[in-house]
Image (cartoon, rainbow, N blue to C red; front, side, top):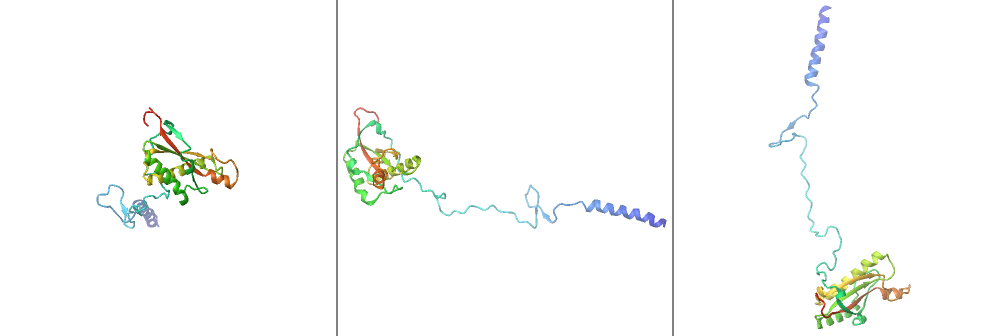
Length: 207
């Protein structure tokens, strides 16, 4: 009986010692230190992740936004206010645009060609193009649309040989209607680009 009493505490002590030396280890099992690795080792059951490199699709304009059509044409250094403005010279060559568009219709090309020819004949003259819209739409939207219409006409003249630094553009949006009616006939007249001939002022520096 005394033998059992002595053996039982001894057994309990051995079990406690075994748990203290083996049962408290919770680190990863089966790990391999990579050569030259300074950080913690990687488990042999895990594969290091290689960063995925972006795929070059060849698209140089990933945003899908169409660049400004006048992006390759330098901005005009001229100030129209330094010139005498002749609004009558090209009044008959006003270009009209489709609704909500800056596209130039084929039947308007003759007007643009006539303006280009007149500018080629007198190299000292310059040009102001004013873009306009009908009354529909917000002021901000129409201001931007008028600018696109003026820029489209400027680009068309540059393609015909007129130097871009002789052409200035302005947008009036819907602020300067030629017809104050509220019908389609009036709207068609107001969707336009006007050409204003610029004559140098005598003695004006920079002109």
